[in-house]
Length: 495
Ligand code: M6R
Image (cartoon, protein in one colour):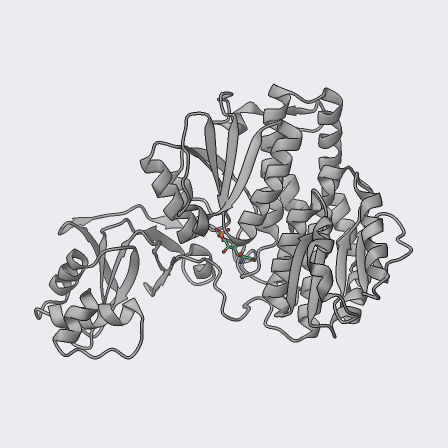
């Protein structure tokens, strides 16, 4: 609409972006006063935005405005100014930061700034940049991704601290504020990408451990479905950044309908945690680069705790509850073992790097991990991968079979081990290459990455890390830009 109006005034457009419309609109609205022009602009445009505006006529000045989209303003001791949608990108540059509110107009002149809302000067809370430089640096690691993968054992311990007591096997009810309501009969998880994949795994945990009906939805799709809101349903928003536009959009919709909402978010002070009723911070520390690894494990750990918390109040046997906690305490050591024996994973990476297409075929608890592993693999290697529950193989995908299509099966010694072995035999009969991850010797597999034995619910923690590393080493062999994969951004703050 605005574009059409501008075209009628002979403005020319060279692309399809809203930014180009805004730049031309600013020119059209120009009054000679920079601040006044920007004010006219924000009164005219609709929808979510975060804009930084400079004008050739006002050198040394900049204006920032936002509505709906995140915008962090930060500065260092020399009053150099920085902007970002996510504070983590500013770590190492700025010391102080301010989260701008919707409708704020920030005006920079030289080394000074002021913020106005409705033409009145206001001051917003100034926060310290709390991401330390160590966290924001690679240290001795070749890539941030490898560093973040290696942090996972410590993060799981940190998540459990204060929330669970492994000695007397109790959970700290205070840490699960908001979940005291026992009237919830259904849980719906909403997220995107890796966070959605964690949500799918959570549905298994919730149903298996807490006996609660649950489903997971991709935020960008869910928004257009008929969402049934009632008093017995809890909507859980999962997000590393807490700023993902698709998730925020669903959250706002649900809030307008008085839905019960809960967050599982990593970045404190993010939009999702502000808008949601209550929740859990995942305590993963700053996840700086694009491929999500430690955030996934942290999300999964948090919801496992949540499921256990609900579980002890609802239905399952004390023996099972104790067993899950015992194994959860061992998970950091299991991941450490994988990190320490990473040569076995590097060896497999060297063998599979020549292929272009991959199948990920897993069952039950491993299906969401397959989904996440397939995403991780394609995201950083740029190789094609598809995931299927193994049982689906004969319903179509078998048509793709040839010796150039390696298949990955996670075959821990769990409930479905025998079924997985049959799938491997079916695949080997067609001469596919088979890579497995297991605590058992798999005679028919070409390569098996060994992991420790645990219980069914805990294998996903371990298998996910194995495939993070395999994706990493394969991408490294291919010389990919691992920390900044092409076409992708860390926080997807636009719809
Ligand atoms: O910050 P969020 O968890 O809401 O981000 C959601 C996705 O954009 C994100 O998980 C993305 O899929 C990852 N970069 C994948 O590694």
